[in-house]
Amino acid sequence: MRKNVLGLALVATLALGSTGCVKKMILNGQIRSTRIGAGAADTIGDYEVARGAAAGGVLQFEGMHRLAPDNEDALFMLLRGWAGWGYAFAQDDYEVATLAGDEATAEYHKKRAKLAFDRSISYGLELIGKRDEGFTNAKKNADTLKAWLQEHFDEKEDAETLFWLGSAWLARVNILKDEPEYVADLFVGVAILERSRDIDPELMAWGATSTLAAYHARAAMAELDEAKKLLDLALEKTQRKSLAILVNYAKYACMKSDQALYEKVLNEVLSTEDPDPNLRLQNTIAKRRAKRALHKSAMEDCGFEAPAPAKPAAAAPGGDAPAIAAK
Image (cartoon, rainbow, N blue to C red; front, side, top):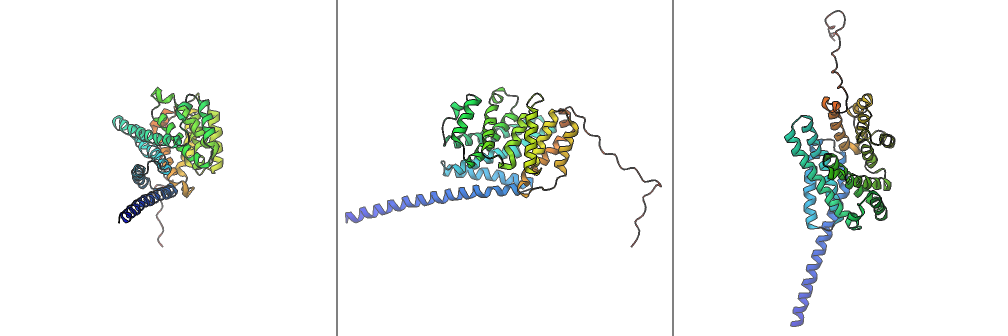
């Protein structure tokens, strides 16, 4: 009898353990599948639909991360999700409020964007820490960081992690450019993005190259020749289908005080219709930024005069327009 009881207890224990393993496998499979399918969002051209989906996505993965804290796919999706939310939506709201001169609203959205980038970077550092825990020591200077990145990150999947981490890092510095403690660590985001580009330059439509070009065009005394070189390369490789590259080209033109180039590339963004279905969301965001960049106050920030409004066409000689002939 005692042996039977012990046997039943053992079977029950094994069954419970097996059930736990199965649940973990199902959860991990669900997370992995969601990561694979997440690229479908890039084909959505409706900005408001994308906004709602992005908000729901980060909340979903926050829950999945709590259920599977060691799952690297969940960490990656949180890194990417919060970086994307911060750039595409919170920062966009900040720029809209800034352009409108609404300081209180702009400050509110600036804090939202910072919180998104903070969270993205936190998850990104946790993720790369699973490969090696030496990041804190490595980021003492650019040379030690570059050496550490080269030693520990060389697989194609690493490029994606480094791209989003580096992008979030630079975006946070950009929105906090008046705070020296963040600006001092600008080199960290640059080194991370450079490593991503070295591993897989084509990722995100040459996104690392374009972002690094914007970094090199950060000021009139920055590395503008390098910025142009990178922008020309990215435009050639993408056949001008990634409109975000053209928006970054406008930043270069601003720093070069070249108003004609500035207006040319921004108007190209606005006039181009759906050049690549896989870049619809990126291009929708680029169009929003291009339209704002042609606003009077944005052009004045570059030292440009806003273009004069188009004059109505002159009336044809002879007075009234001819009547349409009846059929």
